[in-house]
Image (cartoon, rainbow, N blue to C red; front, side, top):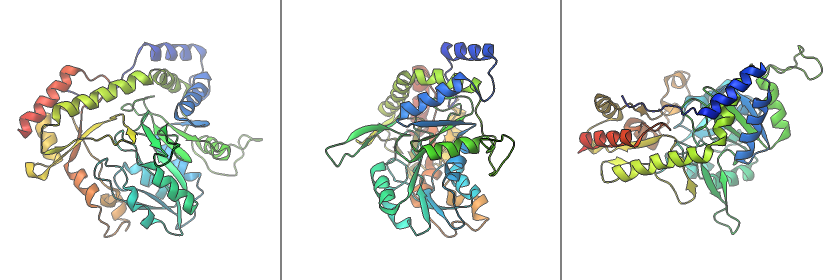
Length: 377
């Protein structure tokens, strides 16, 4: 079976982990943790990095920093992982949904303005499968309405966005450096992994202090076991940070491999008329975190059907996200009643992604492409 993903762990990761073990600093303090936070924040063009236990907790902390009141709203795509909506509901807010853009599968920025109300506090764009959201319109709307941007860059490590392209001052900026608060996951299938792990980035020292406090049980500064707020144990370990630091150091090679995977798949599969392949808009440099495709209904196959046929050929796949408005845990609570998002519904029904890990070989990719051609020919 060709796996959908395998992490790439090199000699530098082993070297740093062994050094960390020898120091005895294996918990949530130590030189690797600080170096990891600083290195990733700097890489993304942000001032402060706050490492946490995973991407979901990073989202929870980011939304907690908004200080939501009852009836406050956060706009986000329906097509995303449930962690995004859960971070809003967990913190007492209301997620307000937007459909997907049909080419990139990211949040459709043209629909955001109509969703803004007096209760809106923030917009949460989510970069999907390695392709950036078109951020300039989001930034403009946020400034116009006094909203914050929580940028979910969990799937877009190293991806870049050409900001200000309608002016003479356009510049390429990395995802994770485009919001007021950004969040990352370092799960095993990400371009940078710590096994489990995440990070919150910001340029605001107040938000950074609040995020650090929230991840560490909100211990009082002057009196450790005295609490005026409730926080969490969302800490990352120094051991995990040692792995992450080594992974950051080879980001150019990682991105080059991911782009090679994406471009190779596209070159081999673009002749098949009944599938939609990933795009790269002129204002984006995507990293093909996962190589997705969407089946045309004329095939008579759903993504579930297609995945089963690929499995029979020894190919592991994963389905696309199911929209938040179709999640029973939310519909049973009366959220999103009667809401329809046709693009998200279609790609959830017809989309899956192929093996895309950093250990993927050219021979394995060739086998994947042959299997796709065999089924769809």
